Image 1 (cartoon, rainbow, N blue to C red):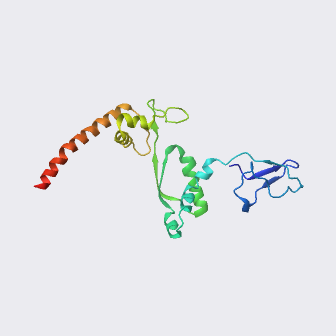
Image 2: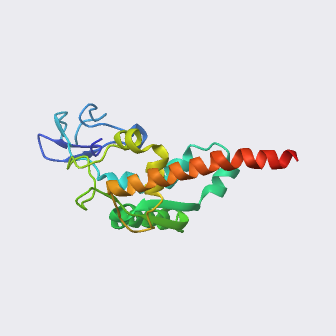
Image 3: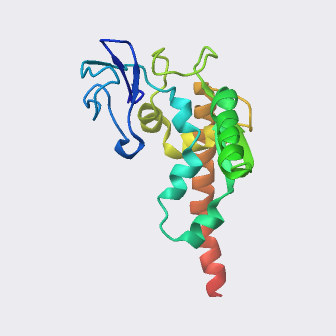
Length: 194
């Protein structure tokens, strides 16, 4: 939503929305009172806030969903903030600044930084680039457990390249584990009966 601001077409004066009227969409809503010059002809603001301005409030927004005040107190600071390394300077930094400003403290105790899944050419997977490997296709070919085992091979803060050979290895390993389990479990059940 754009900033709740209008500009008088007559004199250029800036007209802010009244706090009690917020939230206001200036593209739809009009000011409740005329400009100081008497005009009611306003140009609405079209620019919007950067998404990081709202994203940096996620700890506060999450806590607002909890009605019990005692539970709310225990939720801040939160215990963990998971995120990728590409947005440290945006999301993490801005959230720390907002936490210090609003609560006089950092909004979480620990941060866990993940990497990206890289495409077969070693580039960050991105919908906009069209280089995403579809999980459904991988699951259909190698199973959900094969995909999970591949993903479990990642290390904190490091990117994980997508290599189909790793999924082949994962599927073979899991098949061996499954077959070994199917063999061992009846043997263990027989032993427990004795």
